[in-house]
Length: 136
Image 1 (cartoon, rainbow, N blue to C red):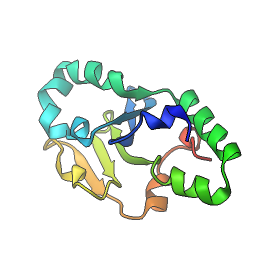
Image 2 (cartoon, rainbow, N blue to C red):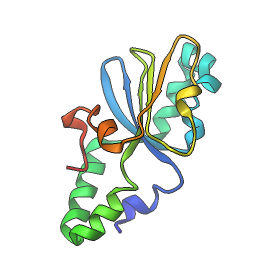
Image 3 (cartoon, rainbow, N blue to C red):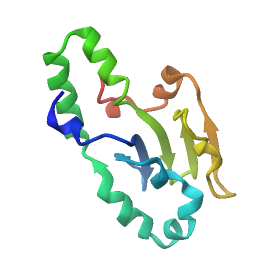
Image 4 (cartoon, one colour):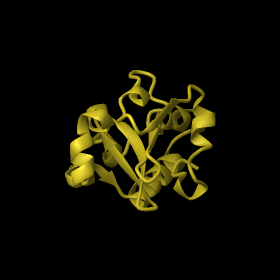
């Protein structure tokens, strides 16, 4: 496995939309307990902290492409399963969509937010715009 992914352990990939801009982040799930960060979200300091965990799309896309060319299809399919987004947070629409089975993050949102859980991974991934599909 390439070195880029070795450092991405013990967290989840999250697609975040803010000010009509989509970005990926990788962090422990506690970073995405939105109700715990409500005041920091309102005053903007949450985003300063979140930016520390940004994963540039081109970096992850090229890393995946390298691995895809360097692995058998079976090895790649097994590896990519652990490198997929599991959460979508839309700060513009105040919406969180969860596919992370280990914690009900969709319930950890402020009162004026909409949270949902989508169990089927393929259904969840269909919500991600094609241009952000680094795994294809």
